Image 1: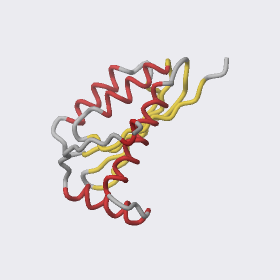
Image 2 (image 1 turned 180 degrees about the vertical axis):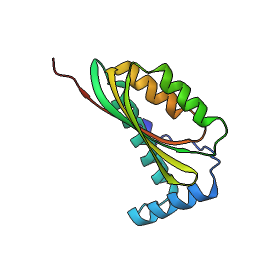
Image 3 (image 1 turned 90 degrees about the horizontal axis):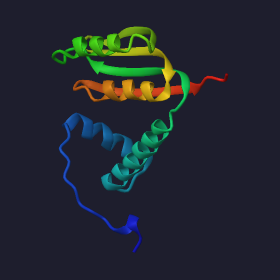
Image 4 (image 1 turned 90 degrees about the vertical axis):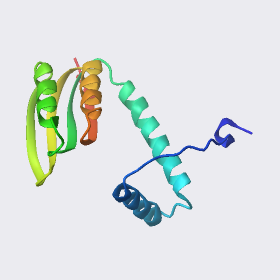
Length: 140
């Protein structure tokens, strides 16, 4: 038996709307079970994490973030984080997607480890639904 064949059972609590959306995608993509879809999602998350871990050196990039406007103290926290990184953040664009959901696009420049730390800090905030970091190296 290989490591991938050694299965463990876990329990996960999810909001019904999130699970319903996940089930729709699984059905559309033809997954045989939720377990297979969850394994695929975890593999994708691990790949993305490894890719983010490899962000090194001087870089230019963008952070896209979707968050819940109504989450208590979230706007203040995001603003505080952005001000702490004023040397890294070059510009940002804020869009109201719905009355309670916002999209923010942040243009960034700096050392890859700093850019990654900024993205991860934003990602860790309650009410932040999605954060994506995309960077390119600066050719010197």
